[in-house]
Amino acid sequence: MTLITVLVVTVVWLLWSVSSYFRYRNRLPLPPGNFGFPFIGQTIEHLSAMSTADGIRQWMQKKVDKHGPIFKYRFMGYPMVILDQPEGNKFIFQNEGTTNHTFFPSFIYTLSGPHALLTQAGDSHKFTRRYLNRFFDHASMSRYIPGVNRIAMRQLTSHWQGKEQLVGLDMTLSYTFSVICNLAVSLEEGPLMEKVRQEFHTWTKGLYSVPIYLPGTQYYKALKARTYILKVLDGFLEQRRKEIAEDRVAEASQADMLTGMLTVPDGEGNLPSDAFIKDNLYILLFTGFDSSGSTLAMTMFYIAKHPHVYKAIVEEHKLIRDEKRRSGKDLNTVTMEDISSMKYTWNVLQETLRFHAPLEGGQRKTVTDLEYKGYYIPKGWLLNWNNQQSHFNPKYFKDPLKFDPSRWETRPPPFTYLAFGGGPHTCLGYEFAKMSMLVFMHHLVQNYSWSLVDPSYDGPFIRDPFSRTPDRVLVTLKQLVVS
Ligand code: HEM
Image 1 (cartoon, rainbow, N blue to C red):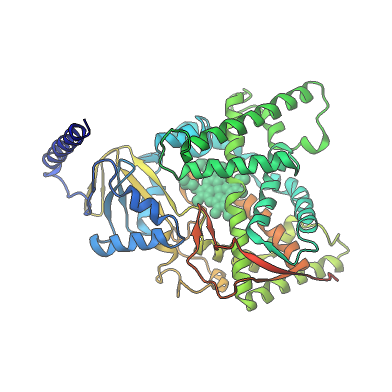
Image 2 (cartoon, helix red, strand yellow; image 1 turned 180 degrees about the vertical axis):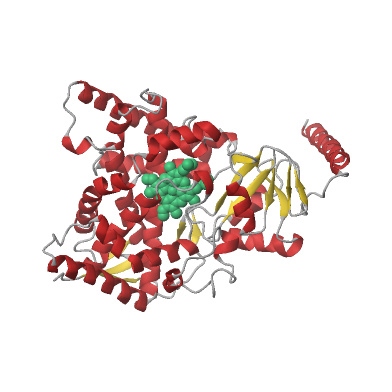
């Protein structure tokens, strides 16, 4: 039976390859590279390269050395083309919506739900993005910042004070999850929040797994986790709707995203459906914490490694505090004006993101036959955008393996720095991530100094799926006396 299956698949594959050859022989050549075995192709080597921070970069470099900067391979059954960078990223992002659109394998749609912004394409993406944008504009940031400030101070007191050692990554994830839960659904810290965070952890592993739906597999567990989280969201929706109807929404919940989605109509005058609200709250809760939490922890790592960076950051925040004191402002609150003064700290965060972009790239699907730099790329193939080939290219980032925040005093060329993606799907939470990470850094460096328990560690960094040290950035802590 198995032998017959193998024979049938091989014959179909051979017929397909021969017919492709005759279809394309009068046209431009296909990109170099090979597809490997039917369906599987290079999926396994690609997935295993994703388990360390520089794995994908090294894997791509090996292919570039062999085939040149544009090459093809097969990933999860799909023909995929890597383009030369940064021109390739520009080509993909500038043509998104016309010659290519966003694409995920079907199991990702199952895991995310049919309405999630991330997986939408074309008009439905534009519609959803326009609707959600109101929760991420500049006015919203000014509304959110007092709550973010309160959570940062509370976390740094309740979880950090009196500790001699702590696991940096666990603490920063606790902060970022607390922030997004609060702003999305007004969920405060406690056992329910912790349980939901654990379920998201399980769900995220499913995104990077082979989608086999059998008890015990990552994918199976991820779907169970999604069912649990949706049930929690159902409860929030029901409760809030009741509160709105009885005009007794708590003051703290009046400005959260859930109240917004239940009361603000879309561009056509309709309130969004429950399924739309749940899928999008779900995706905002997910995108809203892991990436910024892991970035904060890796920033703590680099600051501890580079005393001159630590000194410069401390100096920047001391100046901000001194200025507040001079002008009689509250020393414990951070304003949007303070955020724009944190230029050096933002450069440090960007340098961390250059090394450890939470998302190294993604794929788009061609919706028409394409020509790119003398190659023919058929309709239905996938194009890979990525930041790994440009973030470490000395042409755009001099001495790329050096952690050097001062490089951010000048802007890198377009389409070379893509930690937040590009094109129509560029990160919706950019301003939010920036604001919430800077608020945390402001309070952190004024209240604590820290050193790494393993100061000599310098990689390899694990990705599961975001960068971390094996000890999850274990630090020794010293509380400072704030003047
Ligand atoms: C360090 C922090 C963050 C980084 C590096 C980051 C990075 C990214 C990247 C690379 C994409 C593009 C994905 C693609 O093109 O396929 C993206 C999309 C997105 N991000 Fe972020 N993100 C961060 C934080 C956040 C936060 C805090 C939120 C929300 C609260 C958020 C919400 C989103 C959403 C909703 C999308 C989908 C946008 C769309 O499809 O139109 N992100 N992010």
